[in-house]
Image (cartoon, rainbow, N blue to C red; front, side):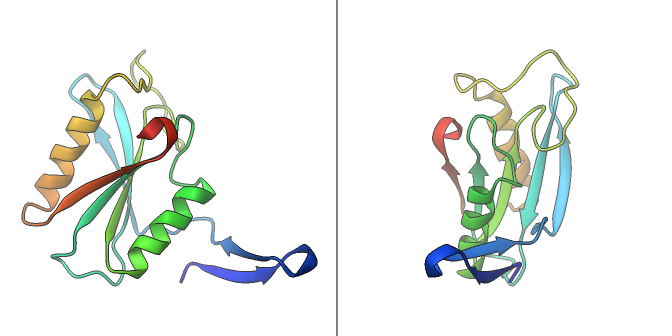
Length: 133
């Protein structure tokens, strides 16, 4: 596991994560020249395991603690995860004057097509958090 348990004040438990839990990262160039980041965790999963796309909140990315926690929990039960880092987030430089907008799903459509092309015979789902949903 990519984390360890510790004790906080008054015996509270917490999970301390390693800085990076993802086994593969890629930059997906979009049709308009923009770029988004995809961080994958597929450790200990079969090749036919389902893939879940995690859509972080408005300013979130794959290194947000809530994203890492969800990623590790899903991976422990055999689900492959890809975190969708929006334009300009997660260390990406904006390549176009367009930023993330919750009312626009074009970037997500391209990500889904890409994930499906990498995994044509598996179930694909998504979990959106806050403005990512």
